[in-house]
Amino acid sequence: EVQLQASGGGLVQPGGSLRLSCAASGFIFGSYEMSWFRQAPGKGREWVSGINTGGRQTYYADSVKGRFTISRDDAKNTLSLQMNSLKPEDTAAYYCAGRPRRAVFQVFSHQEADYDRWGQGTQVTVSS
Image 1 (tube, rainbow, N blue to C red):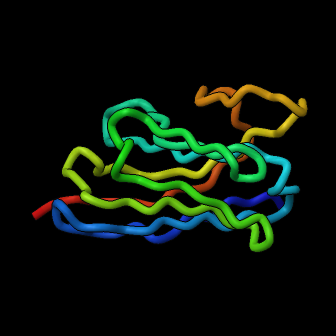
Image 2 (image 1 turned 120 degrees about the vertical axis):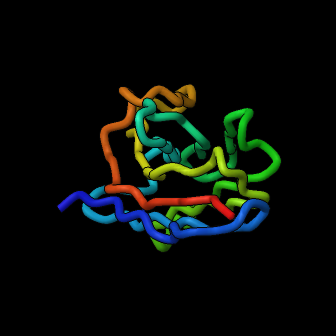
């Protein structure tokens, strides 16, 4: 069965750090462009960060650039997000998602509709 299982969320004080992980199974992880999205209560889903197939290129929303680092390990079918200097506005449910690679020079997309593999999410709460 196709699955993306996110983990690593929790409660942390402002300025603290968390590392999120996403374990993939049931599909060819290495052929998927991957991203992290987040959604706060009452708000729409927001793209946070992405990484291309092979992991040579990374992308970040302006709101997290310089604080978050995305990475992948295709040998272990895992995606990670290192989150540093966390702020209360980072509080949200975080989801990992995959977009299939359909062309050799596919342009990276951060559009929610382009992703067809989604995890259940893990909650991150930043509060003092």
